Image (cartoon, rainbow, N blue to C red; front, side, top):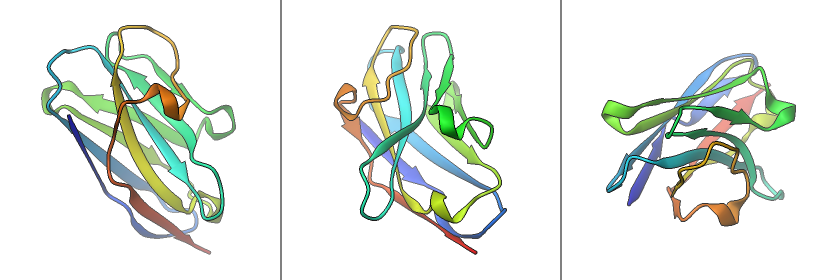
Length: 125
């Protein structure tokens, strides 16, 4: 399984950005995909996840409202739309995935078996 994240860049505060994560090589249809982020000097944290089995989405409580995770099953691609970007959103964003048939949130790093290379989002004030 390979995950390819893209879409990062330099964005002005208040702007929007959409990150993409192409998931290649899954042999089963049931898996969860999540976005994590790691700001300089901080721990990697879960931002949002989507469960393929029923499409449910989950968000870190403090980020609800500005982040939207979605997926395109036909393309095996997940997206993270970020609105009203703030300087504290500056981080390397990673997508992660794991086979999963449940319907609850997975927000811990150890719950994911596959990781993509990060994509850097820099928000300028």
